[in-house]
Image (cartoon, rainbow, N blue to C red; front, side):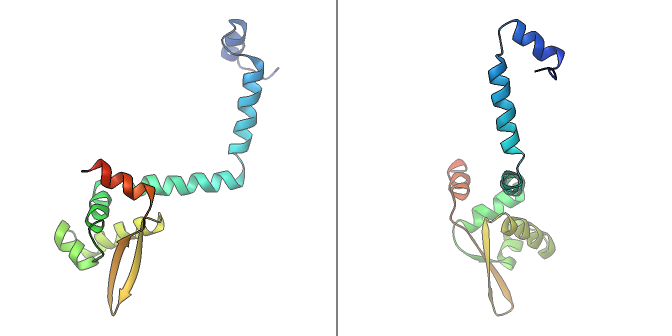
Length: 124
């Protein structure tokens, strides 16, 4: 382990860390750096980014009752159509809502997921 930093060497000397633990952690970190795992991390980032904004959480909670058209959400939240559509696009890209068209109207409904269940449970 010649590439150890001084802090790590000191932890080994004090018997706080074992070289085998460090090697194991490095091997695990290499697995986390694969393109497959990076894609999973990006998906998680999108999910947390989507639910990390209060207006999007409000939209999800309104949709948890029933499918709604964009105009209903505009009225309920006092937001403009472009703002509501932006938030819905983020939620759709994260896989939390699905869109259907009825004529020229767009309707949104939540996608059943553990994330949606958790949001509803946490806000009751």
